[in-house]
Length: 184
Image 1 (tube, rainbow, N blue to C red):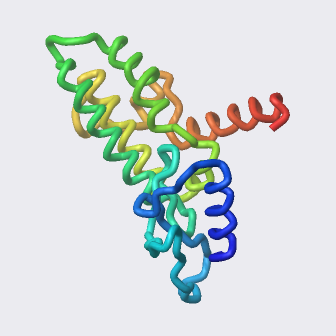
Image 2 (spheres, rainbow, N blue to C red):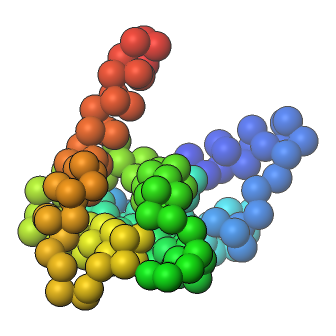
Image 3 (cartoon, rainbow, N blue to C red):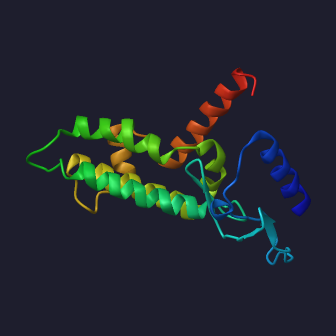
């Protein structure tokens, strides 16, 4: 790997470019429980640190690519966005349920399902299904002014909104089909 970094450095020098080693991290992808230790790598004479996760194009990658870290961060972002929208909703004043559902479908859902073409296999796990169901349920209850004990499944049926795990799979299918049509 050090040889590959030397090749990258010589290419950068030839093109008049540089790579900032302080903004560079190493993440080893493996399914092994205890991977073998790797010798330290150096870029421009500085040692590059190893990390447990890295953010790339809005996705949080972890060594085993199980997407748990990414979905946890997505949950935090969803809740912060949800509470921004929630401030404009109430049972007796504020935006109507129709507008609240539009906000959900147009803003919150695409933000949550970003890059679902990559992490959709994670939706098979019960932990992820429960996470997605709780996210959707909390917003739908707020949107229509329902009680905390109202089942999410009942709200999904009444409002004609599919469960989020199925929406993630559907978004992944749509993206895969679009990429196939483009020849990718």
